[in-house]
Image 1 (cartoon, rainbow, N blue to C red):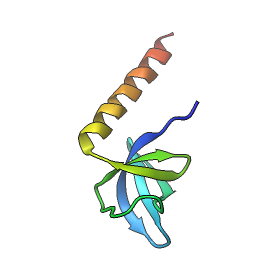
Image 2: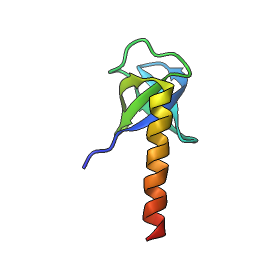
Image 3: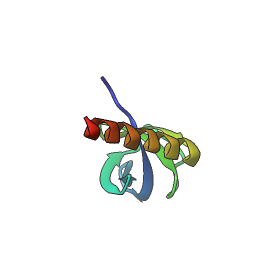
Length: 76
């Protein structure tokens, strides 16, 4: 099973790299596949690569669902 998660672009770096925040956790990722990113944009992240830009509303809804799924797993 593959899972892509929303991440917020915190810093754009040389060589098509960026520092992103995944629900508060910082990561360095490749943004080579996504054009026109700016700080504050949200991307869908999979295995260290930003795959597409998404809007903030979609990112927040997806993160909320992931938190809910994690809480359900913890309750079992």
